Length: 140
Length: 402
Image (cartoon, rainbow over all chains, first blue to last red; front, side, top):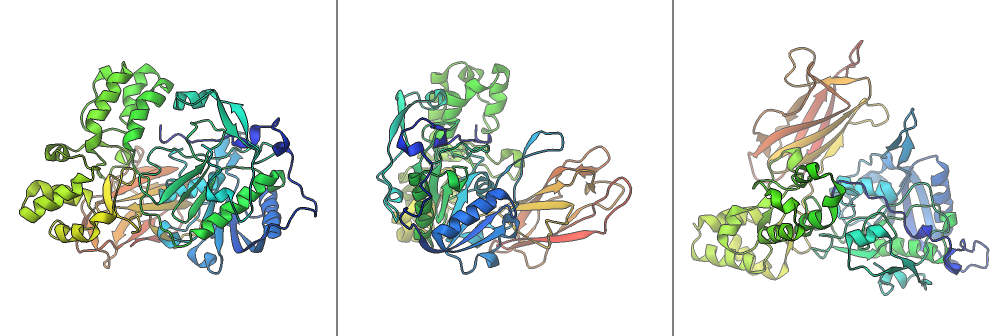
């Protein structure tokens, strides 16, 4: 029941949906969509996945800094408007068995209360579990 | 669950999703038989990423007004599970993919989610999700039970239930099970035993049942206040006050209720307690000082409550620690520092192997008692990590809660 991990396939399965399923328009004709915010992205440092998100966020926010999740502390958040917690959590053991890995974010709920944060995917779920948030993976 | 009227669709970047109807997944029908033959959807990512996303359960989500579900998704659970939701100033984005695969509306929704988090700056988490809601217990019978072998159903239910032995008949007849749950639900209570295995469990509160008013009923705090105002020595009212109102003593309750009665909220998932709207949740999570995640052979997490300290210890493969009861080696120790408002109420509990060694994962539990008011706890955890050949120098970490 509660402790089972919830894995969502999300909306992206709809390959045959009408115009919505086309990739986003990445040409310069797209209206500027820039948030006047300073973002701190805490993810898996040095991975292609993080590089994609860093490039995207830099297009769409006033300022972006990327750190590893394990470096996310109260001090690291100072001066930023929104903190984004993300990362790929699936990995494989040496013998090929699927595993879940966490960035082991040291920040506590009491230190983060009231700070705007975006909890993305499984890594956001891990942190929500640690903090016993309603956004938790344990309750998925 | 799709609410295009929600503010997150309005801006700062307007979204006009082209909604289509998709055949309802079979698992949705199991979770919610009343769901229709189709569900409305629109696309966030144009490609499916290898790693799936995340949804969280609906039961108990909105039992206090610090949280809201915003958007669901096609997922392996139910139609009311949330992929986008907010708790305090934290916004969940459960979808997983690469930004270059966003649709135009997906991209705008993502940016709006960031802005939505920013718009809730300063809003605190008031209630946690640490135990099963009343609805979750009923859902065991309506949704989850068929997933388990007959022989495992009762044992599985008892992961979430303690106290009274549930009759075998409720595992044979769903309607009887729902009646059994409904008769007890108003008196569900989360016993804080301090044992790891009990952390999600609920039971019937015999004292609340004797009181005759369900603990989540708006009449409950009113009745407690009236009884304590009439007789400050009313033992049952004092007992229930201590159990269900963690922020006030029985002696102060009538005046406190006069001041806060209109602002009270009851949370099931937050421990079956009443809280004052706007106050921060009591998080038991402890800060760990002195750890070096890149170099340490051991990682720890600490969780404290008024009656126990629990430390999860993860030990790298090939290494071990020594249990406190071991006759040889350098055992682990927990030392409550003098400036704490707690003292030990018993020895450390943990399970070790036959050689007194802790490997891979260990859970340490230390019973606590208050020695003064407040909730300040500082504990020094000292361990010596050894492999088959040698031991590392002892290492100490400090875990703090306040």
